[in-house]
Image (cartoon, rainbow, N blue to C red):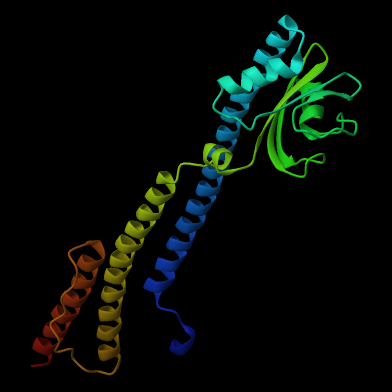
Amino acid sequence: MVRVEKMKNRIPFSQRLFWSIFVMFLGFTVCFLLFQYQREREFSQEKLNNVLSNYNYQLFSRTQQEGDIDKTVQQFIEEIPQKELRVTIIDPEGKVLFDNSGTEEFNNHNDRSEVRKARLYNEGFAIRTSGSTGRRYFYSASNIGSYIYRSALPYDPYVQSALSTDKDFIYFMILMTLIFFFVLSRFTFSIGRTISKLRDFALNIEKDRIPETDYTFPNDELGDISKNIVTLYHQQQKAKDELSM
């Protein structure tokens, strides 16, 4: 005994096919975009960290040659485009030996995330709010001879622009999703139309009504099969009528 669910509770096959494929494609696209966005963001952070890390080594070299650290740092900042560069020198115990932010009292800095990373891996960077000034910075710390040379830039539009990701790829993926949506809808609509005609044909036969409609099917494999079914039925009916005469 064949049991078929009620028509009113059944979603058309073409719609189920469309949404199943589209949701899977959309899920894959979103996951890929998130992965690409994170990768681009990490690359931008590494690039800015390399710039500031280079500054740290230049400052180390200059401070070793000249005695006045404050004057050396001021001259260095005048030579670079980032005029708000914050420079900090930290000894092995975490005591701040120099900082040009204007703050006079500092806590032990060995607990700062970028400093901890530099102690372990010689290099470290972090984006966080300063516990000394209250401003948000991009920090880059370098471990040079057990001393930490740290450069930092305020998290302002300049830094945000340097850390921005390429939006062109996102726009391209959105465009491809829209194109896929259009192509898939056309494809599933064609399947749905063929199935609808076959269902109409079957209902007419079930009610002993000879279909008078001239069915036209799409020029594809499913259309060929449907056309053969209708043709075979008409041939069978014709042979049956000839035998009954």
